[in-house]
Image 1 (cartoon, rainbow, N blue to C red):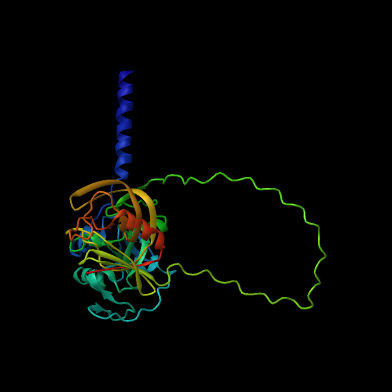
Image 2 (cartoon, helix red, strand yellow; image 1 turned 45 degrees about the vertical axis):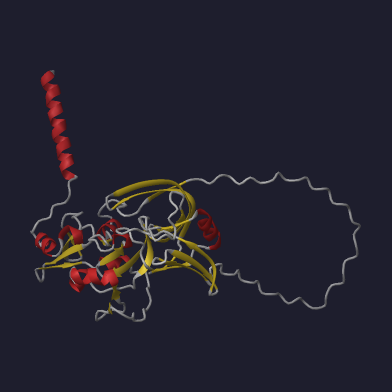
Length: 370
């Protein structure tokens, strides 16, 4: 009996080991030259890890990686990269882009310019051979990890993380290989890690106390009057007025050099307040943005640059670039002093943040500069 039990245990362990071996990361080999291509052209930093084994697809042998699709053409015995960027945007129309001034590049054959960190990353990591041509302008877009500036290419999607400017992680490659493989049913649905997004735990605001309703006196009966004579002509209907745009003429400017914020309405300063912006290593990103989300009260927590923080009950947060927000601050009073102390956000005195939160709607322009 003992022998039977032990034999059952051994067989069970062998079966478990076999099943476990089937779940390991797909192999990266040189059967089709994929391993050499991966190693020579940036490896895991550019392509990520393999997520499928080689398989036949459209007369090619392909293998999906986190950020890309490798393709082996038996007719030419060559390895190339699939157009996963085009596949993910085939239903979208980005429209034309006027040429940008300054240090921008419009590659031949493209209708879109490259500038700033996107151009630097594209040029230093393989250019058109690895990423293809740009197929969109640089624009802000909601991703599963937040709202960031992105630019689509034929074979990639680049995401900019302004709080990591100057580091190797300033540009992130989106997992388009995973997205396309999942859309084709080759892998299970994917989950996103949140490497740069700070976590926010909304805290419900205190309920607003309203006065108890007062009893209303019964209306007195008014004797009916004769109906007025009917007009001979139909009344001309009037057009329904369109609601006014609450953001029309409004913008917020943050002057990092002066550590001061200005709120403009129709070209006139209607409010200003001292601020404290990001310290070195967490510099508040400059540029022109829009408020894309407002949260009245929340817990902010994050881990970046070797620092970790948890700050409860942060009031009046107005997000305008990824995890960067304007918000009220109760844990220091260094506003306007020239001491930059935040982790990238724009810290405001509590009363100033409350005023701005009520005044600015989602869509209000935010300009940050030195």
